[in-house]
Length: 218
Image 1 (tube, rainbow, N blue to C red):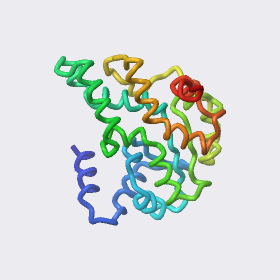
Image 2: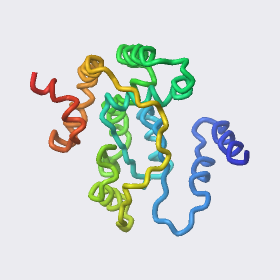
Image 3: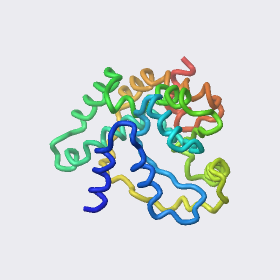
Image 4: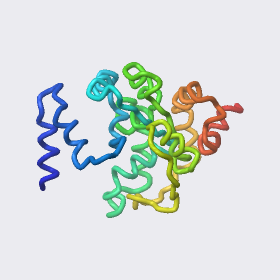
């Protein structure tokens, strides 16, 4: 209850007053060199809000983790509707219809979570390039990848235990039909291209290459 009250106080703060949020992040901090917060919702922010975050902590660094966008969109819809899927009120066909609807309406929350091109433009407009690190979900827990994160944050490297899964999703393992997946890959191709333009085609994980290979060889 105390945590909920503290969170509600943050939401009730006057526009532009982020002092409470800054204090909230610092709670319990000891001698740690870096502290941070993880939230998928940050992908929906505009450049103005990223600028406010940068102004609040001028030394802040931003890690943006990207999952193969078609898989991200499908997973997000399943996650947000997990309860209805579990009790049988939402079936596979219903979810596929929602998925196709998201592909056709780029203002929807589901689409924006996979629209990395938009997020990257907003982030880069507000934050210096040397304070942004782009990463892939598919390789996030590899030692080499995490070593890059440790170096970026200026903290000591440490071994990564990729066998432990925390907050693992219990959502139903529904499979996206190949035809619908191909339709989504075509719609999300500009997102793939925006990421490749920044990191290079060779940096894309295998899951990305497999998903967009038919488009690349057409």
